[in-house]
Image 1: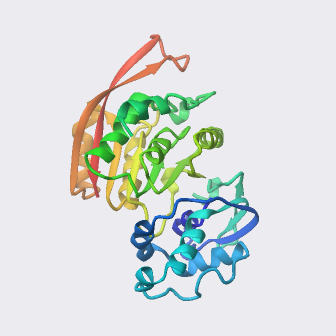
Image 2 (image 1 turned 30 degrees about the vertical axis):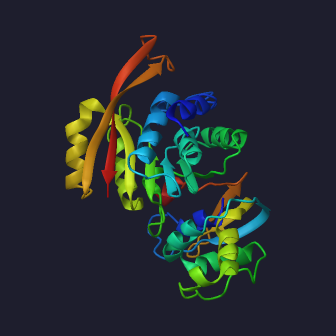
Length: 125
Length: 205
């Protein structure tokens, strides 16, 4: 699971209203190089929940990879360094083992072999 | 990449080793999968550089086809852990990066509209009525650009009505009719091989 996926996911338990963003516990993660595509990054930037991405990068041990607050979109054309960092956070870090945690209920959704398990129990549907 | 080349690569993909009938697990063959994705990219530009979600991805055929045609980010979602493991191995064998998630499409909870295109071969709803419409409903909530889906030709009018009336589709068109040849996977299949006529749909949410 990469951080773009984490950025989209909310807790899906019935009745939960504040299920976003999910907490991230990463026991094991890997980094894999991906071709750099600036146009893609510029297009996807406005759709990203910044605080969720910053939180996820922190959970993997990168407290300074991204700025705390969402930067002004002008940085997308002015700073190659920023685009590279954004690219790395969004597309190159893979969580292999760990869990996603609902911020409201504390329910843990395990991540095993890179695949988060978001299946619900009967009483959660 | 040419259509023939795509179809050839998809032919190497490992399919369900132990298909589950209640999930209507039928493999999406290389013929159908290659045509679906090739049309999506070549005619509409809905794949290259996009975020693509494969709903009910099974062994990952449609997601892998998207990756081969240049999708920037792919996420495959399925209920079945075994199928997801196979999908993961299939992607690795072709050196492709695909995110996978185990989830029931019915209870998927996504925020925002990061996904551009949804591709899917949903259960046709022969075992559990209406399951194809459940998939379609979620696809309309998630996709910002286009949805490609396969539905039985016999349900064409129904699918069209639902798309416009219930999901406010801007556009819903059948791109072509295809033949889904189902090998005899399950015991209740009496004939050796059955052809089902399916429509390839493109919806604009």
